[in-house]
Image 1 (cartoon, rainbow, N blue to C red):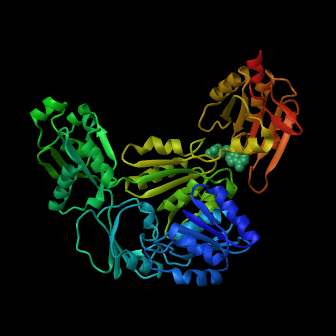
Image 2: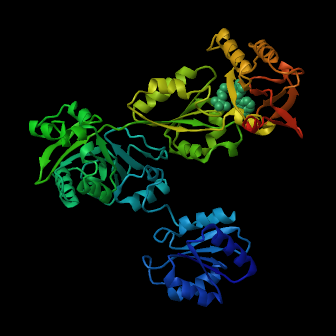
Length: 556
Ligand code: SAH
């Protein structure tokens, strides 16, 4: 419960906004501030005080018990300009709460504690378990001290500041092995191990976990590096296995027996084959996605376990930056850009988001044209284990880099797609609602597509009375195609059909032109324009291009 304490009108209004935003999580404490805080203190895990910090400090001082008992306290000033994490930043969650409060009130969150001691700046985004001298190493990174990064393999890490590298008194060690803990090293546990499990019906979670723990311990491996448990489909609902996985927070992945039967294992068993349809459950499911066996099958009364180590998988994110304006770049794209160690794209697009990248990001920008080369480099970097972001304008999958990259990618890397606002949508919203019914998107570039194919598609769109959005409508070298395309459409649609041309949507130099098929002039469009041609139902209302929904067909 979040207790809200306000004594002024402005404070009460702001408190009401929080209450409306989080009705089930908040309680208002009325009356004089001192009494209200005293009542709220034992009942709430967090307080938001719409009071000066000084007043709040004096009022909470007599109630303070200790870091692990006190609630989080966030102060909001009289004008709701700031949400200040006053007490319990890490432990009680005041830092996080100040950000949430700031979001609702349109305030700026103020946090004064150093980095979250539970994470190492940059690397905390991985969500990997960490052990050892995390606070000391985090501090060293923040202070700019040299920090050693040791890893036997390349993991898809986010960018790290330049002083994290080959040498330093402090260190980050990435390993799945049990290692002695010292005062200067933080140990990060990558998800490199797969525990394959089998069990007889009725096995307990304790037996499964006991066997996994024992197997790992004997091999000197850390349970923190177990990425998931794996078993055969028939055991996917075995309560002991399901509970064991849930207790440790390990995802449980199941495979059909037929697939496991094809995995070569050191200890196949004809008895098991007769019972479940695969000669191995534990070893085969540990090895089902490749990797090498590090703990061969071992047994307890009712369970079997084997452990495999899998190679790191690189990560390729395909990121559309939207049409241009920063606020049309989706937040997930911004997060992915900060997550990537390597960013690849056309220089003009990389420039557009350079300020979002973390220090230490490797940038591979290149000039126009080298599209296939960029896709190839991106995939190659990801195959080497890096976290790579391939960026482009609009949506990365629309006339863009996602297709060539994915054709090369293969199944050895993880791919993450982040949708972007494609040019047709940015243009449509400026024109009105021209895409309100069925539409076709066509590129007029005959660089990669023969003109007769393009022409056939234009004719089909014309024939079907589809609204058409033309990408790549016209460039200096391709100056006749747009006229020719419009002529085809004009044969099937009235001259009064609305046509919208949007140049540089959401960028400097944006221009929106509304005309008709009869009066259209190709010179209004260029390389950075989208041309949207209405269908027979499209009209202009109050200067806005609208294609009605299909309701009139439903009515007839
Ligand atoms: N992946 C991009 C499209 C790349 S093809 C996307 O999803 O938007 C390049 C074409 O996109 C340009 O020739 C132009 O037709 C269109 N385009 C890209 N950005 C645009 C913008 N801001 N305004 C208008 N058209 C744009």
